Length: 85
Image (cartoon, rainbow, N blue to C red; front, side, top):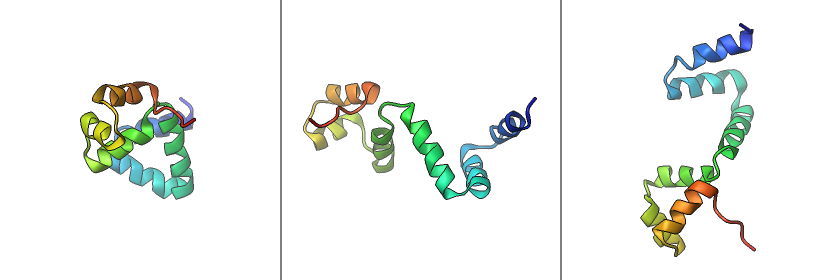
């Protein structure tokens, strides 16, 4: 098994918070931020999810804040927030 894969396997044995601390120690904050952006790009609504988790909001509350329905928020969660024209 290649060394990097072996190290990743050991990292996934840790709880996520401990793994994050270890990544920050080894890779530094700049690389860690770039990793997070790359991971978030896989999820269409990564930024929206992060805001919702940070503020403890549900889809109905997000819809109320942005003046859309809960169904629209649900669509944003699955397909991403539409760009502004």
